[in-house]
Length: 172
Image 1 (cartoon, rainbow, N blue to C red):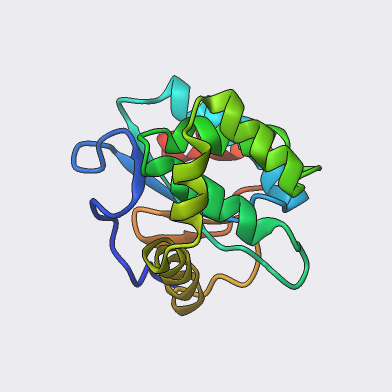
Image 2 (cartoon, rainbow, N blue to C red; image 1 turned 120 degrees about the horizontal axis):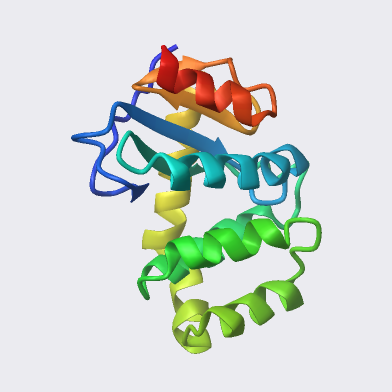
């Protein structure tokens, strides 16, 4: 399967997708234990290979299985409005086992965000539409679980939970 929505300025991106050898897109759910396990591995891979890898995170909250996933995605997107998406993204994944309303509020404070602005942004149609667009784009691209990865626009089934599986991308 191919990525139906190309990477654009609407995405949250680490690195330069125009010059990177690999553009890695993850559809993830902040409350998913598999995504939580993948987080430090993906982060290390991206951090160590910034010149060769661009990383994009898109929301794919599995609301039926993970009751706090939507609130976590909304908190991350609201953080983006204050220029702190990646800081919140990292904090949420580091707390993925407990994403209660109280925990998310503590993370908003820890990242140094304006809590009133976050609350207003979370409730905005614009932010809810962004999450829904990510999700629908994932569905149309064949995402049926999280984490799901795309490499240079093609669905990649090679991630096995190890650093080696990601590193193999650079040698292909």
